[in-house]
Image (cartoon, rainbow, N blue to C red; front, side):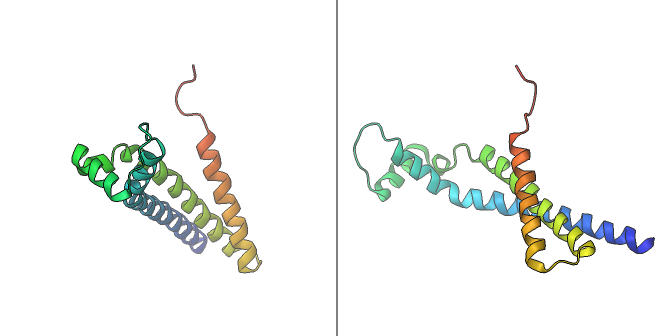
Length: 134
């Protein structure tokens, strides 16, 4: 009995660590890539029809808004992506750990099932309504 409970605690600890690692990794990745997304969005939504080079666009954003101009709205995006990635990574690891301890399949089928479960749970997490409905 002691080995079973320590195994389940180990699986839960691994899942929590994966949730945390996925969240942090996603938040950092979002922070690094966000300025590029801002540049892309500015290029796509240019209303004056004048084509600017990327260095010119960077200089204009910096002169107008400073460094903050490249990170406007990043907090909300970072939190949302961190939550989704954390749930996905945690689900993947929990499923993989559970399958490794109880199912005699090969590695690839276990990884495939774990990936499918992670995709299902994170998609479900995205579509569930949050807050009161009108």
